[in-house]
Structures are given as C-alpha cells and as structure tokens.
Length: 472
Ligand code: ASP
Picture (tube, rainbow, N blue to C red):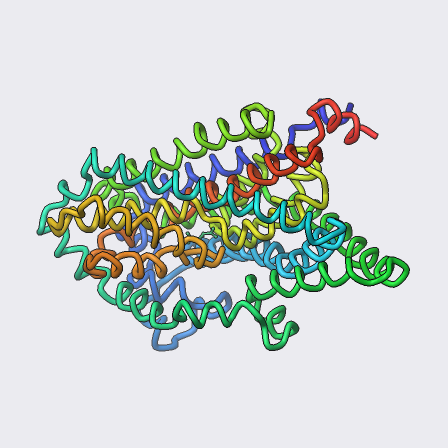
C-alpha cells in the first residue's frame, strides 16, 4: 500500500512541529541584540516592521537602520515568508470554518430525522461537555491548591511584570466591557439577520441558524427537503476535500506558526512563571491522558491509541493555530474519516463543541484565578472556589474558539471572586504557549464527545471497519 511507503501525515506534522520548536528555541537563545547590530540593524522592531523593498529606503523608521545590509534584508525576507505561509494556512482553515458549520450542522440536524432524536443527542452532548468541563476545572484547582505556584512569585517579580505588561492588561480588561451581559447573550443567540451572522462569523448565531434550518427541514415533506439537504451535504463533502488539500501544507505551516510563537514569547518569561505553567500543563495532560481516555473506554469502547492516532492531525493543528474554530474542519474530517463516527453525529457534535466546549480554557481560567489570588495572598475559600468552577464553566462556554480569547473571559472569572485583574500581567507573557495547549484539550473534548455519543447511538464504526472503508 502507498501509505506504508509514505510517512503518515500526522508524523510529518509532528516533525514540522518539533523543528519549529527547535528553531524557535535556538533563535531565542542565540539571536541577541548583538547579532542584530553585527548585521547593521540597531532598531530591530522598526526594521522588521518595514515591508520588503523598503530595506534601504531612508524613511524615518528605517533611518536608524540605514546600514542594514544584504544579510539583514534576507533575514527579514525569510521572516516575512515564514509568516505568510503560516498565516495563509491559518486563514484557509478559517475561510472554511463558517461554511462548514452552516452546511454540516444543517445536514447533521436534518438527518437526525426528528426533533425527539435531536433533543436526545443534544442532551447527551451537552451533558458530556458540562461534566468534563467541571471535572477539568476541579482537577486544575486541586493541583493549584496543592502546589501553590502563586506563593512562589516574589512581590518584586510581580511589580516588574505588572509594569511590563500594563498596556496589554488594560487592553484585555477594556475588552471585557465588550462582553455582553447574561441577558444580552441570551438575546444575541438569535441573529436578527442570519447572513450577517455568517458574514461576521458569529459562531453561536450560525449554530442557532443552522439548527433551526435543519430542524425545519425535518418538518416539511421529504420531496421538498431532499434537494436542500443534498445541496448542503454535497457542499460539506466539497469542503472536506478542501480541508484535505489544505492539510497537505500542514507540516510546513505548523513549523511556520510555532517557531515565531516561541521567539515572540521568549523563554525567559517561562522561568519566571514556570511552576504556574507546569501546574496548568499537568492539569491539561491529566484531562487529555486520563479523563477523556476513561470516558472513551467506558462509554465509547474506544482505546487510547486508536483515538489519539485518529485525532492527531486535528490535535497538532489546534496546537499550532490556537483556534478551535480554525481547527474545526480538520476535527470534523478526522472524526468521520479516521475515528469512524457517523457523519451526522460528527456534523452535529463537533461544530457545537468548537463553539461552546472549552474544557481546557475553563481549566486555564480556574487555575489562573487561584494562581493570581495566591500571588496577592488572597486565600480563596471552598465556597469561592465553587464560584470559580461555576463562572469558569460559563466563561468557557462564552469564550469564542479563537486565539487568545480565553484571557479576556478570564477577567470575568477574576471579578466574580474579587481577584485583581492587574494580576493577569504576570501570566500574559506565557499566554500564547498555554493557549496552544488548552486549545488541544478543547478540540480533543469535542472529538471524544462525538465518539461517545456516536457509540451510544450505534453510529461508531470499529477500527477494522474504518480501515476497510478507507481502503475502498
Ligand atoms: N484559543 C482557544 C480556542 O480556540 C480559546 C482560548 O482559550 O483562548 O479554543
């Protein structure tokens, strides 16, 4: 078989990822301000901000870099090309995210056949999401309480980081005023204009519109609904073909996305809040490697290796893109093609999960809240921690599946228990890398839910059946 000769896609992506991390770490370690001056650049920021072709122009911004030579120009060219490839990949996935939610969810709901089934499957899905999210936060809080990473941050380090990230914190806190009230969020579920919801990628509204359309299609005669469902179904298939094509670029794109993420973050900040990162990553690992596998084994009859092998391209895409929404097309495709979940269950559970199921993000919001409270020597009572579990569960649901969204909703969790939002300054420097990790957990939960729900509905193929089908 051709597959045996060629390296499987997920291994290629792993290699891209490992190389991206290695190159990012090397640049972070060895590329110093001295390196910049040796190639004639004394203001790297303004030099890198200039577009190619303006290298030697004597504009205000580049005056400081008038001596920059060929090597510097080449460095900038490579950096720009790298960004272009990474962003093209990211954009292509985002390009697909809204249409796939609309098409696949409409077909998913319509093909459930009747509203009773929709209620049953919807109920199981939401129960899985809420249960695993609450378990996830509880695990995170327990480890944070035991290890107490916040007690290891000295007041000096806290002051230094607060000064350094002041403007970023103000931006995050400012953005929470954009977060609508609970009542407004309820109202916002229904789009006044579904086309506007599509155009502005309001995922929750798109979900409501698609579910309403799908449900209505089950209520009209099949002779009429058939062609509409077939239309959306064919569109979904065409989109999945596009995803497969885009994923060929994934190994290179993952490299291009991860290397700069590490360089921009800088590893020094990691040492300052290393214990906090370790606590969160261990918590996320427990959910990934223990909680989901147990649920999958007990309720889905799916083994650890099978699940991870099937979902690895989606997990790696989530890690490099930090976006559940952008990863959604890959999540759907892997869940159906590699894991063997029926199309209608995957089309229903995955889009819903990418928008509302954020077990990783909710754990992050819980851990960060207790960490910041510890740093300010505010000991949260059990009652307050219960409030954190509740608000983080809701904040997770309200967090859009886009990069860096979790930190904005974190402010709301902090405020719910009176922890100062300025504390975010200390964790902002590492947010990018932790965003990558929590997004993996977020989408893993969606796939696990799809497998479990499919199993209980008798719509999950066995591993052998998947292999036979894919060989056909
Ligand atoms: N980036 C996350 C996601 O897309 C959300 C977050 O935690 O910021 O799933």
